[in-house]
Image (tube, rainbow, N blue to C red; front, top):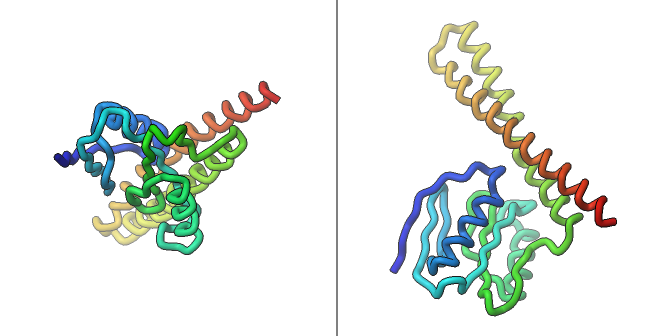
Length: 179
């Protein structure tokens, strides 16, 4: 039986999203499809699958991303789907550990890519928001007051970037402890 659950995760909470998906798998609900705030599950044996998600360097249809997805599938992982540049994978638990990053350095590099992605969106929203607010003030146009929404998204994205920057700093400090 299929079950659809609508749930919102902020992009900087990708680790919480992955944890939640694995908790669902542990309950016997296996991820089969993803969309914007939409997750479709199918009944399975509890703990049958482990789920990982990753922000791809390029869009999923790009040849580099396709090669990476094919590589992961060759290791036994199943590509569930994508939402923008986020790719969702699952692998049967009986096939062994399923981790996309083998060491702290690769996790830090990946986290830096996520931070760059969020920062780009944040800066773009701030620029568009400031521009639209100034246009609204100068032209007395109500439509351009939508720039406040862009500014709000930019401010919210800034908080997400700060959260991930702190996480990356902790990971670097932990890495230095073990060197």
